[in-house]
Amino acid sequence: MSERYSRQIPLVSAEGQERLAGSKVAIIGCGGLGCNVMTQLAVAGVGEMVLVDRDTPSESDLNRQFVYAGRRSAPKAELAAEWVRQVSERTEAVPMNLELDRRNVASILKGCDVAVDCLDNNESRLVLNAGVQKEGIPLVHGAVDGPLGQVTVIVPGKTACLECFLPEIKSGMIPAIGSVVSVIGGIEATETIKMISGKGKPLVGRLLSAKASTWDIRIVELEKRPGCEGCSGND
Image (cartoon, rainbow, N blue to C red; front, side):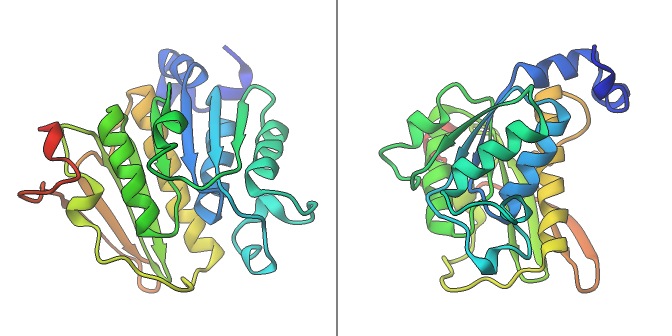
């Protein structure tokens, strides 16, 4: 086993490290959360990432999307794939410069072990939610709204789905501080590593919420919403 991972193998085990190397992760959204998740998973030794985003970087992104600083104008997915390969030559990065929708979600998720929600809107999240429910793929969900952040792990057929607890869809600009986004993205990456390696206790069916302005942190159990259409077929 490579010396590169000698500090984390005691935590994930040699077998867990091998599972990371053989894993395929879909990162949906290459913005602030996605930049942190893709970086941490690459240096942790994840074997393959599918990077999905239809946007190009803008100046207002750079307070939290460090991957794109100083780089040429190009789709985020392509720049993100270049970054991942630069960070870890052992990670295969597959860029998908497209918008997630109900027609392509199945092909995006094909062969993936885990999907990571790094989106910034609930409309797309519900599309992703339907996709992972249908394909039976665990979903690590993360979201940031100003000083507020949350993370949970959804396992189809076992836990509540996103549609069970997401609030009404919000629109417009979402304020964000890069350091807060990094914290939530780091938690998402950690949960992904735990799910793949089989080590630790992931936030399966539990929602971690944090308020960075006061560092009030709580974890609550999530329950399926009766009659939820999002996961009604996976009971």
